[in-house]
Length: 376
Image (cartoon, rainbow, N blue to C red; front, side, top):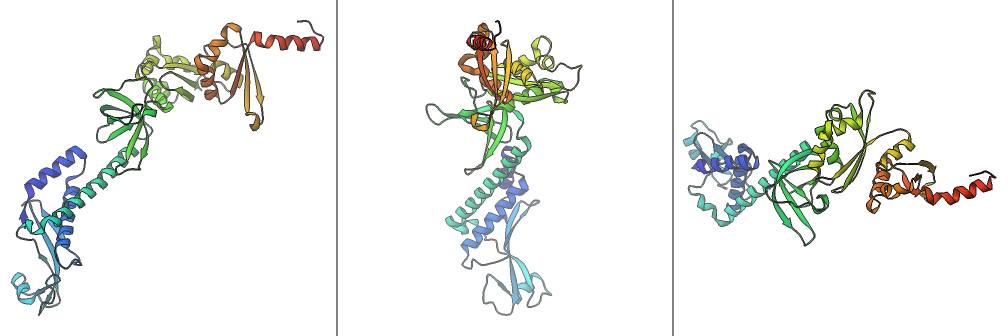
């Protein structure tokens, strides 16, 4: 037996503390690596049943191999002479198998190749353990919000970078597409993110996190609005253009609970908390309705709507379509900057929305009235 316990236990404690790998697991990796090195060093690589044992009390480690008791030795790696065996166990007989210590007196006997083998095996086992830890951590946190500290920024190109976030026992990676547009991420800042997916394509799997995913909005409302967390208010749909604007449709089965008011809170405190988390992203809280006309009208808020006509076109023609008429002074508001308001409303409701002003439809109305012989 060779005494190497102090350093081994120190390394095991450090790994358990820094990488959450149990001490017993690490010590078993070391023992396996020493056995692999021993087998690679000895001429007879087919020695079976060899194992390394670590004694916690003495801090010693030894290599043991099974050997059959024989009258005459033909293979020293598989056999032990009767006389030598009886020195260990007086009443042993030929044919019995003893576990004999074969630890080299000096571990340097393993040589450069043997040490390299041990190092490679330990590295491989630690990598496998780290992968399992990351997978377990992801399963425990997937599709939830969590808070972490930005650890570093990995610059991939002039337009792309990955923000690496310390989530406690593991790291999360936030690619460019999952970041808030225009947001400046700095090392040391704390951020709230949505745990999106596990990408297992490289040597070590990556936990992908996001600040741009619509479900982050849902999680934040559940965090700050008790009525959503306890199920009194339901979030029916979310449409988001991260960093700019979000529309969220809410509903309550309880007639005494105003779902929109519950989300906004007294003096807007609740929604202000969500907006602050999203770096001042604009949020429209919409009242859900089972009536598509009301729902579409609400979704186009803050614009005032004159009429909504619904058309159930064939899939080839675009499917469900709503033609919305608004006052002339509400047209730009209904469409929104760059079409954002109508685009989000369509995504929220699931209807394709065409918006026209009253003046744009006035000529058509006059022709229709004339054809019917009616006065305007």
